[in-house]
Image (cartoon, rainbow, N blue to C red; front, side, top):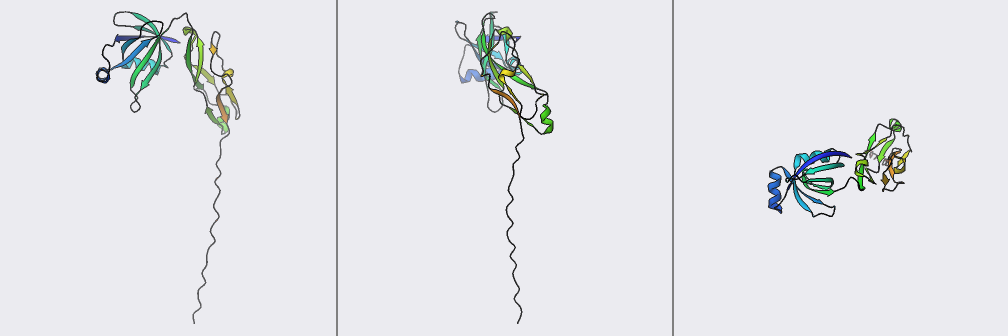
Length: 204
């Protein structure tokens, strides 16, 4: 996990009207919880939060509150507007660097499979792998090089280089990537209708 800094402010007013004002000011409502402490309602700068999400979301965040209180947190969840994609709300969870956490690490496919050049179709079945590790040992992503794959080859979770100190919680037999044979749809042609030839009547 990479480390980033993020500023936050205490949020006193709640409800739809308060959230509209936050949006107008370029901020997002959020909640901080966990660590056997009280939950805290916060506001976060929308652009700063968007950068954390764009960079992958898996980060150890050093959060500074308005009273200079420091919290070590991770971004646990966020909600996006269904139409315009703006951030509606975010959940932050307190962590300790000495205690293991559960995290979902994204899978990144690297390269072009050899079998794709001969018509193979790449099927990505798994986008994230769930692990347990100390925060500083959680990787930002798992890179999977597929350049050697031929048609029919499969990569399972167990085939990925995970690293020491990391416990895989996902099913290790789960398929991550498959290079399959392209499916060719055969459309049966309809039989041609017989041509009807009318005989001319002979004149009298």
